[in-house]
Image 1 (cartoon, helix red, strand yellow):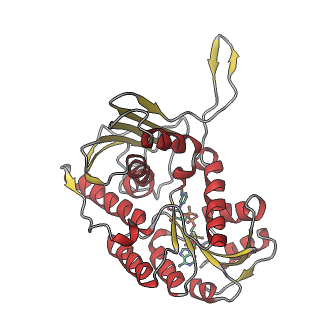
Image 2 (cartoon, rainbow, N blue to C red):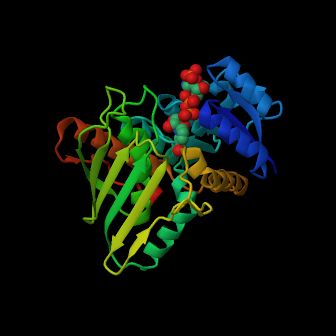
Length: 335
Ligand code: NAP
């Protein structure tokens, strides 16, 4: 069976996923695309080898020639499209965030539970990165004993003027929020944000860098530096300290250059270089799960938890205090 995918949103990551499905993922093809920008949809349809263009997300979801839906439009539109796909009984992969409000995430969870089986996978691709995967396996096997602390850094070379202080939590830090919950198998219960002096290389409205401090339900402390104008590259660091050892995420493999009395390796410049292989693995896993008829990967609950923690972090940016994360009990459906 070849899964016929409909793509809603043909911006930066939409186009990357179309290229991925067209060239590197097996068992699927792009059948239909849509975007509120008609020119972007036309370009994407051509790049997908002649996909059909639907007028909007609702038409795409209802189409008889779409087996599964890939949502890559901007965040505030995600809930509408994911709910539409669930109503149509179609598997849906939604780029993060699942929805921009906890209430919308809860509506998605309720709809999925009412449908009776999982249809939603959320795009937290770090779970498909080799280094993170190895870290998870070792923690779960007890290889460092009981985890106590995590030290994380999320650094981008630079961000466009539209990037806001809140996006450090909602768009950047949300990846570490999901990775930490997943690695530790624990929920995050509080957030605090400490602001060092800002870099002169930022846009004036932005507070950058930021230290975010999380605590999990079991008392693990996580510190996260988000620094989105660090100038030198895209640099993701993660260290988990346990009672009997320490795990550190490996830097991406690059050839070592020795010369001019120095030794060094290249640093990735953008997120799509750093996580390209993880995105490939993630989308292949999604297509395989659609073919098998059993959803896998990050769930709507994971999307909800990440949005709830990000909301508490934004509140903590505002107040400077420790903010408790407001979350409902985890439904048995997502056990
Ligand atoms: P982008 O370049 O702005 O693309 C979003 C596209 O969706 C734009 O073409 C936009 O059109 C279109 N769109 C917006 N609302 C729509 C609607 N209701 N129906 C159809 N199309 C609609 O943004 P992006 O960087 O690709 O990001 C898209 C999503 O992916 C975001 O949620 C982002 O957080 C996520 N993302 C995830 C990762 C990751 O690491 N997993 C990386 C990048 C992005 P207009 O431009 O005309 O509004």
